[in-house]
Image (cartoon, rainbow, N blue to C red; front, side, top):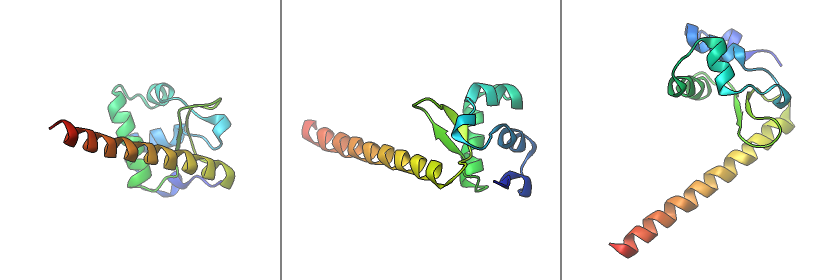
Length: 110
């Protein structure tokens, strides 16, 4: 997989973060390691950089919170990409259910 971030005109800290992230879920890197390598002290700022790398600069960064491979990585193949998207869709559905329940339950008590 060609490194997409090498073709982007990224700010210095963004490039440092993008370069920490490797291809393949078996190479996932933890946020604490990204912060140490990229010399970023604030966790929220590091998260915001990753969010912007995905949403503003179009990098296909996957975040895995469960299983054997935890951390951030670029998908190595379509299988890894689909696995990540499926998990993300499940999370979205769960959050939507929670949202709807909160609205419904609040309406019942007010």
